[in-house]
Length: 71
Image (cartoon, rainbow, N blue to C red; front, side, top):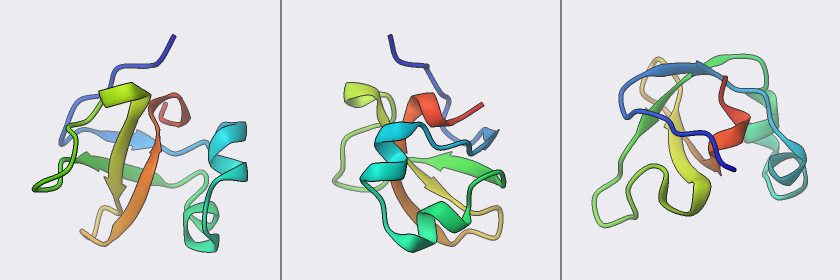
């Protein structure tokens, strides 16, 4: 069962196995850091199929991750 997240809320990013396997280097560098959940224009909304988009607290886009990776 996937974790439900709220857009605009800040979470700690702790990547689950899927995000560790299916990621780029920048995403793994964010492990343990606080991130903000965002919706992107023209893309599926947060929680669709257990995924969401995240950005740093400075507003830099990070990518799509599993909602289970957010605490």
